[in-house]
Amino acid sequence: MRMTSLSTDQSPPLSIPLSFFAVAPLFLVLAAVLLAFAGGNPFTDPHDPALRAATHCVTLGFMASVMFGATQQILPVLVGSKMPASRLVAIFSLLPLLTGTLSLCAGFILGKPALLNLAWPLLGIAFLIFIVASLVSLMRAAARNDTRTAILLSVLSLAIAIIMGVLLAHGYATGAGLPYFEMITAHVKLSLGGWVMLLTIGVSYQVVPMFQLTPGYPKWLSTVLAPAIFTVLLSSAVLLWVDPYPDRIAGGLESLFWLLAIGFAAVTLRLQQQRRRRVADATLSFFRLGMISILLAALFSMAALFYPAAGIYLRTLSVLAFLLGFAMSVINGMLYKIIPFLVWFHLFRGGMKSGVPNMKQIIPETWMWWHYRLHAGTLLAAMSAPFWMVAARGIMLGLLLQGILLGAAVFTAISIYRKNVRLIKLAHT
Image 1 (tube, helix red, strand yellow):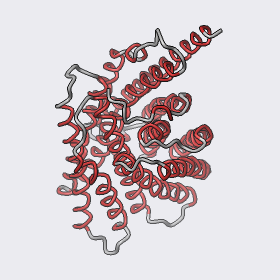
Image 2 (tube, rainbow, N blue to C red; image 1 turned 60 degrees about the horizontal axis):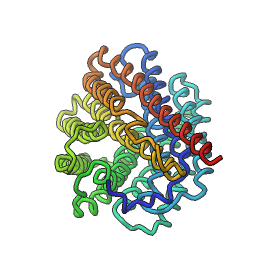
Image 3 (cartoon, rainbow, N blue to C red; image 1 turned 180 degrees about the vertical axis):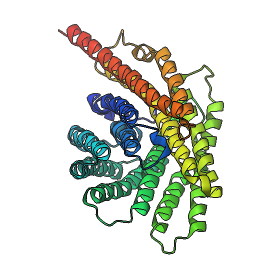
Image 4 (spheres, rainbow, N blue to C red; image 1 turned 135 degrees about the vertical axis):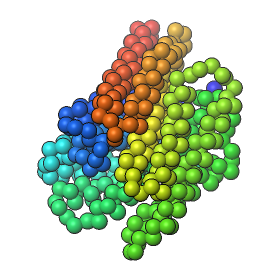
């Protein structure tokens, strides 16, 4: 494992990332419950209130929680710059993120404008604190590498997406006359294609070679990819407000985005084929499934451009492949690699020189493989969910079990850490 380029001495306290990681799986359980009580198949209608609520449970409650916590760890370690007042940032971003997400989801399900009016200021505060702190850290970073560039562009994408999201929530609550279609489209593109994709790309430049023992990404790709994706997404968002709407240019930009995403996935899969250690690894399998899912998402979106009559179903499948297949797969894989590493690292740094549990003792490999199989089954069900009620139920069950399994893994790691900290204290008394 190559760690020479990491600034591990600047790692934040373990409680900061783990507090975010611990609450995230609960939102997978909540998403499953909301879908189960929706009545009928919510995946047939993209505007179904239960589907909208469950989607935000996954994107805000699960993904944003993990990415907030991971970024607190990533910035000091990968770009060498701590977040300012990291404990305060964690407290004042986590609490409003959780309460705002719950209020937003309840507002969608119950159709209560008052809950939406409560949600958007809370979420606005959470993301404002996180974005400002991240930008300060990135501006102060001595490193001027491709990882920093990709993370910076991901945070800028998030800032624009959140402005759109806050305006949309306020508009739904008050009935304001807004260009909803244009704003929703820009919100989705910049949050998923911008924040999620670009953050994954930036972290992958360091994590894939280090943890998966692959060659490094080609310099021509790491230099160009993130700026190109950001430029394409921003241009696509601006075009939404052009009248008349230039369909051919917009279609070309969408195709270009997916070609860039395919390029990233293809290069990553190629690097994984060249890894020095050929032993099967669950975290690698999660990551590989994520790259394959990018190819699926691209296929469905490109097909929607050529077959507009089936556009609703194809784009629903594309979003499912991107969210459940790409984003969740990568997040699960990184969590199962990062959490054991952090527990091991903080125990060693805390003074435990012998008897430190190795990473496979903190979260057993068997546990990860069971989760991987469950997740792959959930993704398989998602590919027919808009057409088949049984598959829709499969997604609900899969999210429920994944939330329970991942939550148990996180709390197992926390309990092992606390047990060994007690041993360290006893040894020093």
